[in-house]
Amino acid sequence: MNQKQFILTSESDTATLAQKIAELNPVGSIWLSGDLGAGKTTFTRYFLRALGHTGAVKSPTFTLVEPYLINNKPIYHSDLYRLNDPEELELMGFFEYFDEPNSLVIIEWASRATSILPKPDILIEFKKLDNDDRMAVLTGIELAHA
Ligand code: ADP
Ligand code: MG
Image 1 (cartoon, protein in one colour):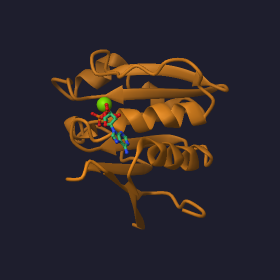
Image 2 (cartoon, protein in one colour; image 1 turned 120 degrees about the horizontal axis):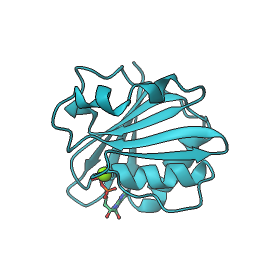
Image 3 (cartoon, protein in one colour; image 1 turned 120 degrees about the vertical axis):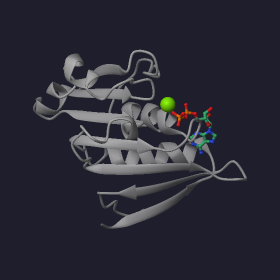
Image 4 (cartoon, rainbow, N blue to C red; image 1 turned 180 degrees about the vertical axis):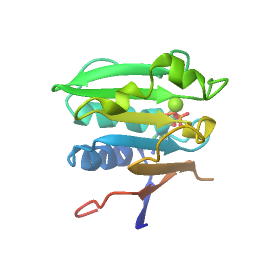
């Protein structure tokens, strides 16, 4: 699978990457991996704004999922860090999100439920570097001029 690596020296680089991905209007699911503080939620904030969301973007750490409807597109931002058992996703109706037309499910900490989740369409692996820059490794889509 084709991969591309980005060095994000500031949040504005993260915003630019989010904008470029948003322009492709992805559907399906995006997994955001990386340690606490790597920049998964920050990326999601810029991404949702780039799609046209104007309100707040809360981290779904405690709620597990925050739903959005942006220009008629259902988007679910989830953080599975606190998921106790992957089977809980079934009870939550999590898999129904994937069945909605044109929907996008963004998942932080998908590693908590890899056994039960469908494979992502896009994977972005974030890493905090020693100098506080972030690295993002993108798999699953081609960005023009990036
Ligand atoms: P995660 O969701 O991966 O736990 P967050 O996005 O909540 O991480 O936190 C990332 C933190 O790192 C934020 O406080 C953000 O301001 C900071 N940060 C510093 N540089 C960057 C960058 N280039 N991209 C994203 N976040 C950055
Ligand atoms: Mg987060």
